[in-house]
Figure 1: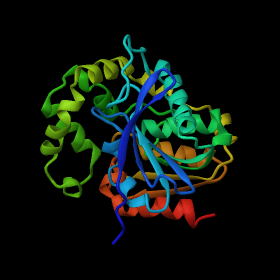
Figure 2 (figure 1 turned 90 degrees about the vertical axis):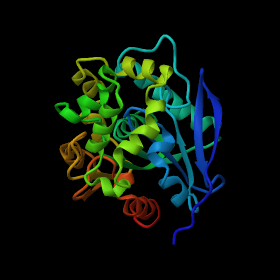
Figure 3 (figure 1 turned 135 degrees about the horizontal axis):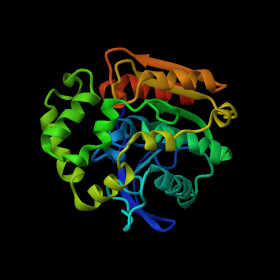
Figure 4 (figure 1 turned 45 degrees about the horizontal axis):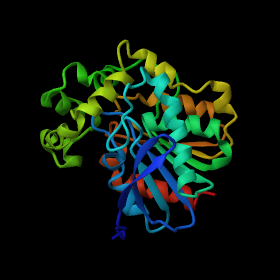
Length: 287
């Protein structure tokens, strides 16, 4: 059985904003920065609650709530559109490493976090060693019905709508305990908190294809990324299609792809043990 490392959490002031941080394995030699996705109620703990305890025995694992999510700051007035939020997230990510006195780290990014990881690799390549991108945005694709529904949650922010979103996130509800409505009830309060609702609505106003496009990293910049990259994707992902990882597989120079069949967007939850094993293998064995 894998040892479960305790996870601590605290707030830091990073730049102009409060950042809520989750950490396990502080003091381990290699740091890993985990970046969450953009679903309603998303935050560092919701995305990485299984990874941090499992990997903190080996790595200094750091997850955080992006500005505009969770218990980090919610600017008021809020920036309008993903293009306006992206520079804040880049600055926050690099500022967090500075605040923790971490000169360089590995990256693990999920969905929106995958796009941010790609931007970090091109914006400050000297700060990062290896990257794992899971169901990543960051390349051009027509927005899916699922992603449009996720980003449009606040058009009709009901418990039923949130439950439907979680149905899209998983291939088999039994992988997450079977009762998706119970998970939705647990997260509904955080998803509909006034500050979170204000930030989220400002990030992704319609038409939402513009936000997919705003997060794209140019192909020539992707081709210059020198770090080894592992792509991880659910074959049956209806939020971010497998084609995004296939595109990155063609564009990135030093790249591998692992695809899980019978798995949708929540690879790190549906396939938690296998995902954690892949992270550990890629960051330690595959050199």
